[in-house]
Image (cartoon, rainbow, N blue to C red):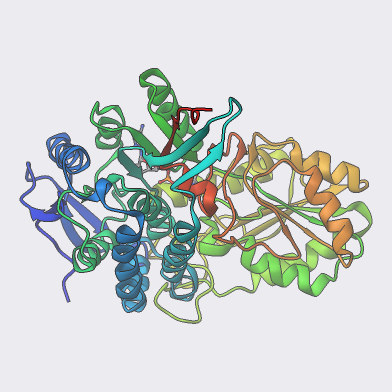
Length: 484
Ligand code: NAD
């Protein structure tokens, strides 16, 4: 089956692109072109925003009741659930995620988001009346924010598209999605499902392209809100543009999360947890727990056990169900990871496993060796900067207060975890770490609760009622006091 396409999804219909430019999707495993699709241009973005603007200003979608919109999104949920395997395969094909991870998270997690947002939307206070402070009641309405620009990264493409499109739709917004150039394919399947679900004309457009096209969309005067997930560098730029134009903006950015191993933690449980959480999605995960904080007493033994576990993971073809770590998304990402591995050695960290050079038998494909450094000083660049590959740093601490200090000594504040036999001690650590999400003996995103970053990890929240509220404007309608 060919994955090639020749149309763009503009205004809810398949449209001829404005130019002949093509995006080649290259397999990170075989380095061969697996699909060719139109590359969106600024003219395509203009057409998409015009359609979204019309659908918002004049169309039925924002004027439907929340219950009517919930029904359409409920249709989408059923259709999405029926195509999970196909979605997982497409994502692994375009960006190299191990198929086990795509089947576990890349495809089902977006569907779980739809279900969670549906439950939230059913309870959401779209319009409520409250007693005012002046003796009369006030009607408080949550109205749609308008035309939304949704810009996702390539690493968890559907996850970061649906976290924006679903709450936007439920709130009554219209949306222009600009997928990353590495991962345009999964959104073609999404577009089909949106049409089948009965989303009206003009409400959603999808135009894949690079950062110039993305920036054109961000600056577009027809856009009311920008919802972005990606690097902190791009987030700063987008935040600055939106600040200048007074556009609503939410930013989900990078991370350098710390897993704190307390002295009473069970080693097997913690290592099993880190085998997944440290290097999930081949280490290309914003919430990856890439700094592992261990007391000085336990450091050497724990680091050795972690290195043995990570070094033993199966690296290879993302389509092999046994694969635990796949290739990096692109050659530039492979080079970036290798640069950091070399830097760690230059900085004096102890390389326990991995290092530069290709994993055995993997000369083709953008593979790197899963790597663990020990004796890392938190001031080293490998401990401060987001590497976005399977590279872990074990950092010794003196006592729990020191561990919390080290965890917080980061420009980021996205996620983290603590591993302990005492859940109360774990909660106390969680209270001290300045990140938007935290796990005790686990780290799992729960879509009923807000997710997002402190500090340079972002602005705003996705998921939970807080995530839905980001697609609304609050309006207060003051009623006159009843005559006495
Ligand atoms: P990136 O910032 O390079 O690109 C992200 C998206 O923004 C892409 O679609 C890109 O084309 C577009 N873009 C880039 N510059 C732009 C600009 N100036 N204006 C408009 N659009 C622009 O990031 P990436 O390499 O694709 O993704 C990896 C990054 O995403 C990592 O830093 C990771 O931590 C972060 N991430 C964060 C979360 C989260 O929820 N916090 C989730 C996943 C990924």
